[in-house]
Image (cartoon, rainbow, N blue to C red; front, side, top):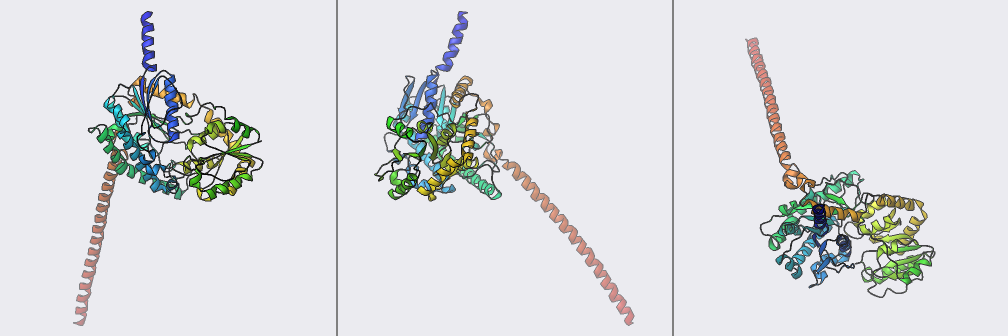
Length: 527
């Protein structure tokens, strides 16, 4: 009996006392929020966490050791394009794709050269699991073999052409839209053609440029003998920030797990002045756009136009969460300007009746969870696609940034509030989003512990991961069949040509004989 207890306790300690290295390196608050939520949940289960990130987590747990990176240089210098917001707003698909890959390269290099991160590499510890954010930073996959530990990824995005090749995940262009294309799964012929070229461009750019860049960083800073393909094969599993009730339903290999909404936590009480402002109105509209869209980047004139439009919502109060980095002028009585208020705490309030956002996927998850209809203004990256899906599902109205004005916002807000279709559809989506066997954060924790228990669960991995792109896409077979087709065509061509030639030759011979015969007959007649 005593032996059984000892074995049970040893197994329990083996799971709950595991050492986990979490790396969330992108200087983005929402990306960090995802990682922070998962690290907190794992720490609460008794795991020892080394949390590498550019920000300080809000939670406190004695099991967590924080390593703050990218503190020696300004984050704006880490990636100038990443923080040049207005340039990002005006990008097209090609420049947006190139920007995402180049910015991820800059951030990955900054992380690998950071003195605190280098200290981790130079003094390696024993880890049972490595969890890293995935944002086109394949060089970090080499840490799995460096620390001799299994690795899982946490993606702030749904499955997309940015990652599908890494997992040999099928994603036909006919119904799986490129995440940066602004399309949904229901595409017309021109849209499918556009989506095909978007995916083709991304695939070739990633294979011939982005992955070689990452391999350069991998060999220079982690392991000069490890190829990028070998590093990719070492990844065991990826957690996706998606759910079919909100994002596009798409094929997934067994090691691609949807945990959309895992960042959400029970809402906290609001500051007293904000609570009173919300309570005194029969309904409140909450506005929260991208944190980099500050008052100065919008311009005082545009801010004034928007405020003028919000003032017309006289029967509603408006809470506008914006970085007022300069004086924005007079604010209407029904508008309250706030900064850095937790979005979920406001959206969850019973008096909030609509949400104006930029199409950030995490904000959409929050709005759907609390059943708030949306007015969306897509700005950067995947937001156009996110908004297109929400509009298609009829719980959101969209406004392009170019037509952003107080009048337009006023019209769209009134529309989503007057038309009960939006409230009905977002409530239906909310039920779909909540109906799961376990909560998304518990599922994320389960799969992290599953990989620890299994050690190296390659059985979840598609065999296609071990094939080159050349073989995976049947290029060798296509070339063979093309050669066979060409050979058969040439054989057919020369056979037909020979038959025609023989036919003409025989016809000419008959004509020639007939001509000789006629000449002979003509000669005889003359005689």
